[in-house]
Length: 428
Image 1 (cartoon, rainbow, N blue to C red):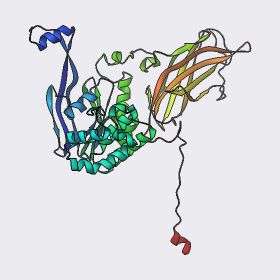
Image 2: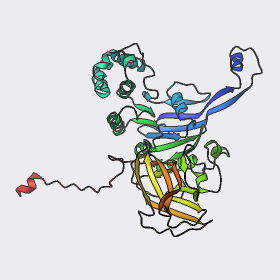
Image 3: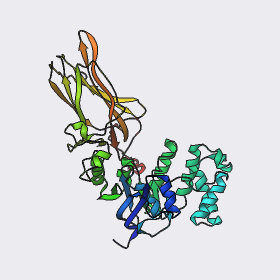
Image 4: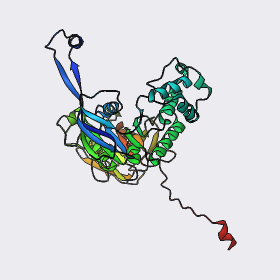
């Protein structure tokens, strides 16, 4: 490892003892017995990484992979079981916002309390106070006790304190999504300002769009181990395989992810256990999936790239011109877009009993970065009546990764041209 580092983690391990009975924990604490049954859980298992000065490094991984644990060890909140951490610079950590706040103190008093804990003198805090108050933008509430704050005001003040102390190293754990959309925008602008100033940033997030946009390098953790490190796109692609159990890890990876290793396409997707389905039973979605532009089955699509939704429908009676549909909802349940074979003027013929129809819907991903729920439908007209043969509502999700979001639901993909006519040109 190089000497030009801000954070250096060497062979870091953190284990916890898991007891079958609470009384066993108590007995060991009181040294009442030598034969206590427990299992070791490795929150981190021999992890090494380095963050160079001025670099922005992201850490991604599934829940329970060790992301927050490694940040807490780096910031001194937890002690490692083995290994060591070296820090070269003053750290500001956005982990559990407001963790050091006293609920009986006013906002102003908490600003001085937190500043003092970080190591600033009263005069230094006086100098930073206007920037903190402007960033938090909670008005006269800053003079009220924190226990009277709404949750939004609380996190705004906590974020403002943490990010305005001019650190050399900024550590962020899922903290850029606090407050309303305007405050989030302010947080991201501050984040970008830190990058331009050459600050060192260690960034943990489930928001893969932000990881892709801001990080120079990404580390992938799974079950406490570092399983990948490299350029954002390369590691995000690897993470997508972890999510669907297709990365060659331990045999139980797919099982613990709720994904089987079956032969159907849908066996390699993350499915919604609470999907809603109904229909006449004359046809059934036998299989379905989404795959990206490299042909890999996935729940994660890069914005701007081509992707495909593919379905197989098995028929139990002859049905004339069945209509196959795909639709997208946001997480609030609003239907954003969708299409079907009738809209696209595709003739599906008259499949008979036992026949299987395969339909593929291929398009560019123009939706904004975020989470979407996919619904499938097989409908049509039978003896003049509209009939639902099979519908699967919210059957799987798609995560859209974006390095550029615009206003609204989808990106207009505008081509913008700017021309400036100089005043001196007019005088010529």
